[in-house]
Length: 376
Image 1: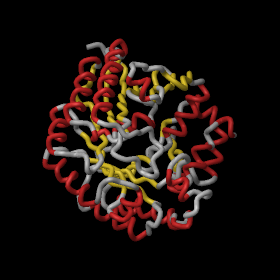
Image 2 (image 1 turned 30 degrees about the vertical axis):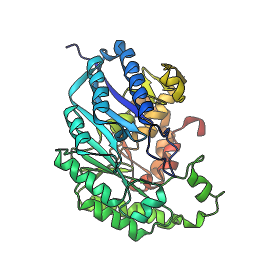
Image 3 (image 1 turned 180 degrees about the vertical axis):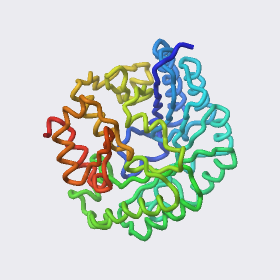
Image 4 (image 1 turned 120 degrees about the vertical axis):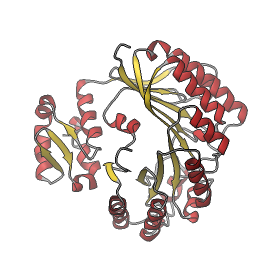
């Protein structure tokens, strides 16, 4: 086989049982008929990419949402079968499905296994049922445990658990307890994010500065302590932080997400899905009715300039704790910025490799913004 460029594939499933109060992702409720129509439209979109498919080798597939596990097992299998038919998929490709507790069954997980899925990402968020109810999650911690152990029973040996800190009403102690309970399960990967209050969500109306219950959010010092607790507890338990918010046992870093941070080409399939192909970023439109009618038009098409590519290399690559290798071009463009961040103790350089220091990671929003050339 002729050597092919590597490609990642993201498949968006925009359906949820109910939308969580904090979520601003593209997701909608849908009955079985609409979900079946969506699978048909998505299958046709995959087929239309066939001319691209055999120019690349697919190294990872990520089925996200929404709640992908709301689909029936055979529907997910059908999508992966179409990908295999129209793309060159590596034998060792990482294939992930995002799953919500309360939507998984043994039959569904068996279909995943038979279809080649080798990684699951379970959206727990919290081990405290009160906090889960406040978030609008459909599951309890007990539901999560049932899904986790069922996945283990079916042979899945690469499981991620999604967690969220700085929740309204959450204390430092309850966050620590969530971390400890998850560690007893020994998952291979843990994603730990702080809650961000986004506009156009119910949480924005309740908890943002324009809302009436802002006082329920942990204060800045408590949120920072939760961040430090995450690092200390997980690293003590043998997890390596390989990205600002992601921890894994050795050998289990998420290859798909690493591809994003390393700017590998990726193809987004499904409603609103984003792509990066040949230096062009674009996304599918967001109209479900148009998509179901076979309209796969692209929006926000952007041919990246060299400056924009340089900026992305820096502010995406430096999210990884190992940092990036500097080229002569990047050194010339960012020499002053690099020296300034180094003097501030935010950046460490060893030879041609640079990375954020622990302090730099603590203030990563500031440090990474320094590489946006228009801001300098």
